[in-house]
Length: 153
Image (cartoon, rainbow, N blue to C red; front, side, top):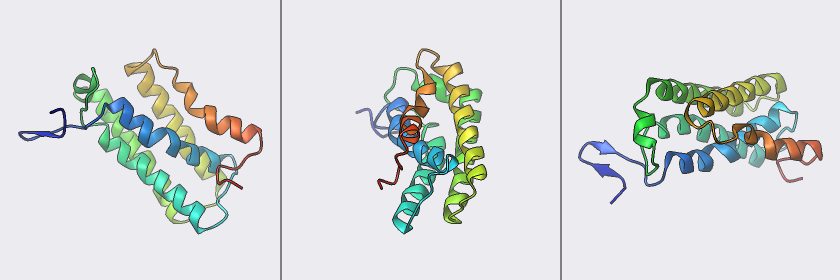
């Protein structure tokens, strides 16, 4: 069994890569959308933003747990990985604070988004340089250029 506890060690039932795609890729789009002025229009929209912020915050801790990926155990033992993961949690915590306050301060959201992008780029450069991490902006940038709200209106 590859999941989830061997003795005192906890492991993910999937690769860290799968956890990151599942938790961060979609959630990051909400952070970027608010930074680009695409603001929530009702409580349900704010709920989506808040959930996304929590997912980013949680992801920083989740990716410190090795999963089924080939390099997961190696990555999670490196200090740079731990530092970048902790930064991701801090970025997510700042997004949670903005979301809970229902902040419409696009500059504050943009700042969080910029930090998130830099964190992703720093991590990908060191640990996965063969994957084009600038793709994290693709969905939100295309939607933004077409004037389509992430909130489905």
